[in-house]
Every structure is written in structure tokens, then in C-alpha cells.
Image (cartoon, rainbow, N blue to C red; front, top):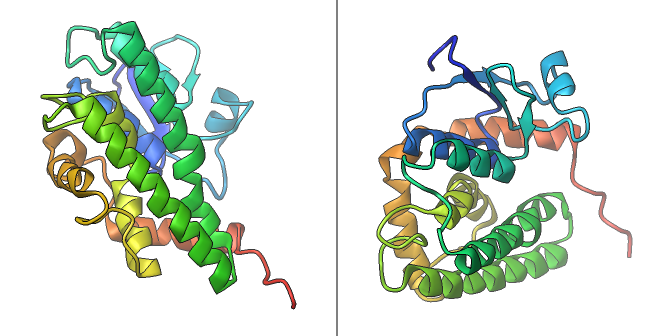
Amino acid sequence: MAKNSEIKLIGTAASPFVNRVQFVLHLKSIEYEFIDENLASKSELLLKSNPVYKKVPVLLHANKPPIPESLIIIEYLDEIYPDIHPILPSDPLVRADNRFWANFIDNKFFPLFEELRRTPEKEGKEAIKKQLIEGSKLLEEAFVKFSNGKAYFGGDDVGYLDVVLGCFLGWTKFVEKHNEFKIIDEVRTPKLLEWTKRIWSHEALKDAIPRNETLMDFYMMLQINRPPRKATSS
């Protein structure tokens, strides 16, 4: 997309953290070049651009220093393009509250997906499933609070938490299917379920959410490079 653009995004299609940056770029109609990264054999460009964490995404903007970390990139894009689909709330208190929930999603909720994959025992997996369900209930409450009866976390239109959580929908469906349970359902999280349908069909997100085949390929790579832990003997 948009080769020779002054904005380039180093990433991989299966990464939800990359997908959320793509979501914002699409929302703001920003042309960019996507540089596909092979995480099994990281490029010199990635290692040079993000020497501390060596992770995607990384945003390259003209001749400026590289910008790593998805949430930092989103805020940067919102600041340099403030008049095109603002992402962060204008009220400082609401903005701080949004950041709190973004931290919960990235550091408490989504890591359970990987923990579920790496846990070998059925009993352990069931305990993690319960944690995911409890986390989804908290997100249901957060949605009710922030949306105030409207369509999105951001109210009438897509906002910060819609982007932060929306990028995980592909992986959420993947995990549900392969573990035979529902994280988001009509009984426990009815408002969140309706939100997922709206956000899933949003034009700006359609091209950012990876196909199931892409997720499966990435999943198999993880199984090889970071296999599940061995079951403990009783």
C-alpha cells in the first residue's frame, strides 16, 4: 500500500498490535507502506528500528526516529493528524480512564490467550478460560460506561478503546473456535457482542483484521518456536 510513502509500518499481518495501527491509519485515511516482517527471522531493519524490544509494530515517519509500540504510535498519529477522526477523548479524565482500560486489555486480558495456548493440562486450561470470561465481563461493564448507550466505546463513532480491543477480534474468534468455548456471548456480554458485530463490519477494520489462514500460519509458527509447556507429572 502506497509505496514510497513518507509513512512506513513494519509489521506482520497476524499481529493484533500491528492491526490496531493499521486501523488508525485507515480511519485517518493516511497513506502508508507496509513492510512485512518475518518474526521467525527478524530483519536488520526491525532490529535497528526497535533495538530495545525487537518487536513489531514500528512506525517510520520520513527521516524521524523510529516509533515502536502500538499505543505510542496511535497517540503519535492522533497528535500529528488531530483533525482527521480524533481517536483519544478530549477530556483529560476520560482519556486517563481509556488508558487504564487499554493497559488492562494489553497486560491482563490478551496475555491469557497465549497462556491458554501454552498450558498443557486440561485443568489449567479451564482455569484460564474462566479468567478470560471474567475479563470479558469487566469489558462489558467498561463498554456500558464509555458508550453511554451509543454504538461504540467512543460513543457515536470509533474511539481509542474500539481500536485497542477491536484489533483482537480475529484472535478472539480463533481462540474460541480452537478451544470450544465463548469469551464473548449474548448471555454474559450482550452489549459487547453487539459491539463486536458493528466493529467487525467497519470499513476501516475490514482490511486490518487478518484472515483465519493467516492466524493459523502464525499459530503454527508459535507452536514450533514457542511450544506449549510440558505437562507436569503427577
